[in-house]
Length: 266
Image (cartoon, rainbow, N blue to C red; front, side):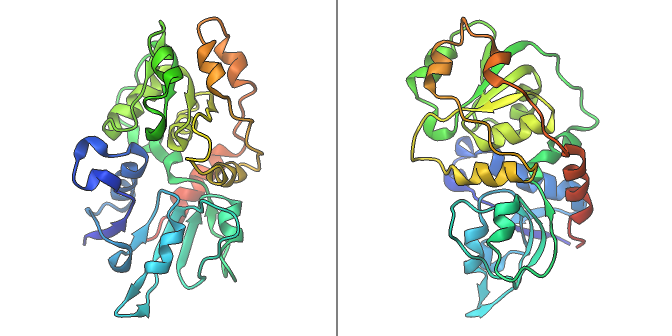
């Protein structure tokens, strides 16, 4: 059996150097948990959608003009005020906000982003040593931000590119004592490996804030106030631990267990 999975490919559909690791983590995790090969499929032909702020795409789940039912495991919303059909099989949703937007939700899906299972995918591989003080993971719209470029020149700082292969990004995150990221899946994977982290907000209005609210709601947390570019500008003389602040992800093990238990059986 082959699982037809929908994920956001972006420019990566035609250029391997433009594959956002958070999106392309989806087929790796689904293949690991299902034990079946995974292929990309557009929403209207897919069996499953998982990682990403892709719930709004469920409206395209139609075949021959008839509504079809998707298996949804861990996908999330990206804006307030949206509404999604209850006709699908909701095994897990990224956060409380996503659940609230499914009108007439008939079940209690597990909560959490499947990226929290990155450590399970890594099992059997050697965990790298902590060789960097801090990893900076800019969202792809922030890769050329002046503060990112200057901070990347500092000793003990690793600039992690979201377009690196998934395994390379996972290895890089584990090699850092702390992570500062404007990429949501940079934060999620850091949480998966229990690397203390804090969100950067560098490009106002270009990245959904609501998806972060949704992600942290799974932990019953209010999102920590994001850091701005000045945090990077003063990184050389700032204590990174103080920048990150108190780090706690209550219920992480329970969220991971719920995601594993809720994975659909194919």
